Amino acid sequence: MNNIKWLFFSYSIPSAKPKARVGIWRKVQGLGAVQLKTSLYVLPDREDLAERFMWLSGEVEEVGGEAAFFRCEAVENIPNKDIVKLFSRQSEKAYAKVLDASRELNLSLDKNLSPEKGKKIRTELRRLRKRFEAIRETDYFPGKAATQVHAALGNVADRLRKLEGNEVAIPLLDTADFSDRIWVTRARPYIDRLSTLWLIKRFIDREAQHKFIERGECADEAAGEIGFDMSDARFTHQGKMITFEVVMRSFGLTGMPFVRMGELIRYIDVEDGTALPDDATLLKNLLDGLITLSDNDDQLCERAMLIFDALHAAFANKDK
Image 1 (cartoon, one colour):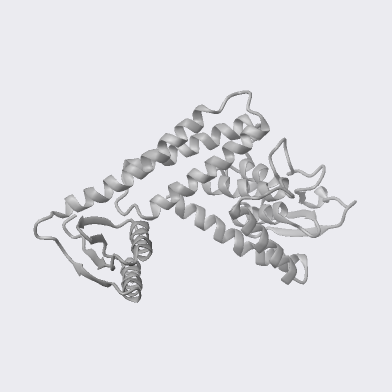
Image 2 (cartoon, one colour; image 1 turned 45 degrees about the vertical axis):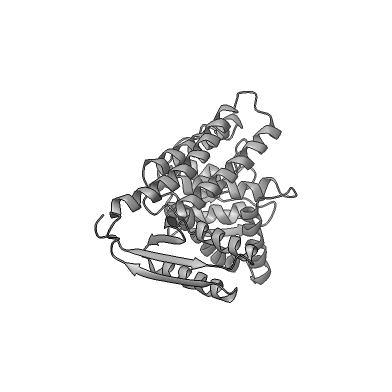
């Protein structure tokens, strides 16, 4: 802890410009900086945070104020451990609010969960997750509080899926039994088929081949073909679970990044026509753009792989 280096930022803005003063203060708070003395704020020494302080200095000067920031290895009269405690208290206070809200949400779940109530709880759960992720962005010295909130939110999500009937008993399969196969689905694939194909090629068989067929055609199982996301296919919707979720559970891909992806994909695939959450809308718009830019289904599939790679990586990073 003695090796920690710090960034210090100090500024002043004329009282005649209250709007600017509030705006800068909010940006400093948004960085997760803690206040040591009057108008003296501190952050861990990181290049990205130093750049943010530089930008803030410029903004302060643009509105007629004064600002300065500097690096320092230690504060003579304040031990590093005491500065770290300030950061910990700040993040713990923010986490506590999310933890309390998640526990209340968990208590609101019951066996007679209506579709309307389930939708409201999902919306609130998404809001709490976003708040949790925002806090973690500025939690520079994470402790037990982050772990507790992460577990509480995961518990709500698990119970909600079970109560909504999204937990269908699915036998666990061995990926070795599905190597060197041709995976077949209908032509002009959209979100569920494309994401399922990504799941297959990234986590089940990296050498998997695929084929798109027209309506009325079916997979030739005798020739080693496996159908997915089609009627009577080996892998397709079960209960309220979309094909992506069925495949991921069939092969034990049940980590939170996959679960989070499944939620977004289900929003687009099943609730098409309804108001989508912002992140689902963004994913849908990206996919619609790829469809417009792609000349054929194979090209679309290849381009869509990167989107799902990026989405999985982002969720995996947030789940650490």
